[in-house]
Length: 424
Image (cartoon, one colour):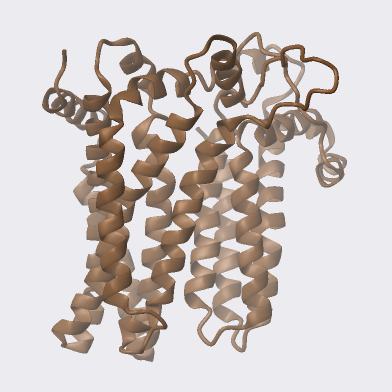
């Protein structure tokens, strides 16, 4: 049997061969960009620069949280690992090491971004506060969210015959036909596959809510709750969650086996709903791209429901920011708009890959490549404008100085357009 150390060594060798740019270089580059942004903002004072750094840190860790499932089970080698005689503990250890390395890279980038603040303040206590803030988020990204992700997948795993098939097909976005049940018996609850996105998303939301409560502490203010207690508790909870997940790591082999079946369902009964009224209105405007757009709309809603859940969360946050008009909306606007833009780039890639787009099959249909590209562009831009663009403009116009919000919304919209049209 392969040990944890051997599997980790094999995994790192595979990553080095597959990656063209070292992770440290990427982290340093992102940290340098954040440092330049923070340094430029120091002209307005220490507090505005700290708020910009805080917003950049939250966006960076939001992306890190979203990447955790791809380090755990949504990997190209997951089907292979699931077939090999490897126990659950080594599989969990290798996944946790990947998450820790990614979290360390994000934390390093955020620490580099705080260098202009440390130089301007010339105070070790201020630097320590920002380092502790980023360190607590790093613990959550490297330990807490991976533990919750594995726990959510473990809840979905079921080794019992028909129920296992139904759970696997539900994960693939195509639940199988429900078995016959006696008259009057209540229908079974919805598929537990929704837990895959719900639990990690809920954990990430709690983490951000906790650190935002103590954000005034970064600039010397008095938070509503003791900052060392919150940040220390977050780090301790992350360690405890990782240890608890490690104790039940035997399920990792089953997790990889079941979750790797996400895109491999072929004979399931599909229950795909028709396009919504908004989607039908968009389809009426794009001519011959309406048919592939309708296909994309149906499959994206069925295969990636988390896109709509996160979109609704971003919509709610931006509307609340517009109604509440906080004294400094920079962190809220940057996190909501930047997070939505980062996830939108990921959605742009998913629109081009199976099971949403089957290139060989599409090439045999009477659909031009231009129509398919226009359909993907329409779906992504529609998702962005509904969930982020329009509420972002509303939130920006409600502020005393709407410049920042409008610039962020416009820049993110440009990112969405480039992501949807970028050739791949």
